[in-house]
Image (cartoon, rainbow over all chains, first blue to last red; front, side, top):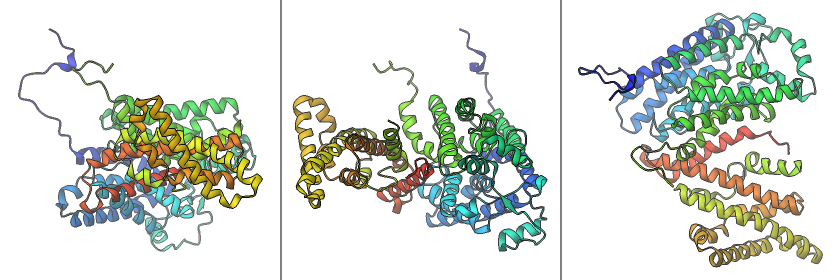
Amino acid sequence: MSLPPHLHTPSSPHIHAPTSVARLMLTVVIALTPAAIAHVWYFGWGLPIQTLIALIFALGGEALMLRLRRRPLTPYLLDGSALVTAVLLAFSLPPYAPWWIAALGALFAIVVVKQLYGGLGYNPFNPAMAAYAMLLISFPQEMTTWALPKVIGGPDLDPLQALDLILFGHAPTTMDALSGATPLDLVKTQLAQDITLGETFSEYAHLFGDFSGRGIEWIGNWILLGGLFLLYKRAIAWQIPLAMLGSLFAIALVFYLADPDSYPSPLFHVFSGAALFGAFFIATDPVSAATTPKGRLIYGAGIGILTYVIRTWGGYPDGVAFAVLLMNMAAPTIDHYTRPRVFGHAPKD
Amino acid sequence: MSEFALILVSTVLVNNFVLVKFLGLCPFMGVSRKLETATGMALATTFVLTLSSVCSYLARTYLLEPLGLEYLSTLTFILVIAVVVQFTEMVVRKTSPLLHEVLGIFLPLITTNCAVLGVALLNVQQDHGFLASAFYGFGAAVGFSLVLILFAALRERINVADVPLPFRGGAIALVTAGLMSMAFMGFSGLVRG
């Protein structure tokens, strides 16, 4: 009898892979590091400060909940999951948002979305995205004021000035243009005023790069690289990013070919906002995503389509967070209907 | 035709009866413990809601308005709904015992579903015609069914989670419903008005 090569089992002793929750979380953080450096390069010191604030409050919230539940603190606090939540949340916040945004978001993510369900492994919704949606609904103004990238005249603050701005709201006087709309937002408001895409792109040429907003598309490249690293490490399932980006690209292509003046190109959609970030780092969250292979394809495709629908026709500029939450909600149902056949039983009629 | 498509999108997603208008919460919380019962409830509600939406429209247009008795709307609608539910139950019992077994216990429960009365009253408020009423009722029912089934599958998963003791059962279900409602906020703005 000959087995395919990957089923050959050599004789003992066996070395098992040193996989653990903390290790997986660390892999995710490492994969995000290049994108984080690019973020600092383009948007300044906001991201590390926001991450730190979010991390402090995430750990504090987790410690409080564990204390109330009389659980041991150290193993849960050191498993890195709070760190990942804090980093993911900080990435989705405007870099110079006031400190209480990150603090409130981190507390909501950890206490309500994660610990009320019993902690890591039980939460049906992605904590960082639920916190982002809560913040976007409650504080729309703070959440949609994005800094311009430094290369096109955005604020160039040293770390202390950035800290001052985030903690106390003291904007240095030398800063003329602190913030502006993101490319997604801009395209949307312009289209609402019957201005075609071509006109928008030429009027605001300094904002746009090759595919999407300047700076944002470069962060997107590094996120793509980090995502490929996660795939290589087998930390995430390939079905979800493929299905999500594929469906977003396909549906955007259809509308773009039909009317390129009112529907941005598919590459614009993939490289804008949180699409790449969501595809590799948010939607792949192993706890809140669908778990069967076929289910993951449906889940990913659902996120891609909903993202496009909300971006194009909805009231919010970016739809990734809501799309992820909506599909989180559908994940148990998808799993229920895509259960793989159990081996050793005849297929059900 | 596009008007009816808009009504459907609006009632199923944007103005979902359960998660946005907060109607029909009793069956939403009460019958969502298991996926099978939720599916049965969803089917029964879809049928009754569409039918009662149309019937209450007919009763209002051809009975109450000619007689100038609009102030009796609420009372009449409740009566119409109760009659439709009882009638449906009798027909189903005689014609399809199998379906009756699936839907049986849920049918009487629908009488007290405030979403059903809500649909009838909202039809009046928004001046829907005959077909618009039918689509509005059907859309409301599909939206109700969708979130009921998704919620039931979610709750089956939460039931095996290590939820803190004070939050077991209804409390965590309400928290979940709140988070679902938040996710549905993403649809706001899809349909104007």
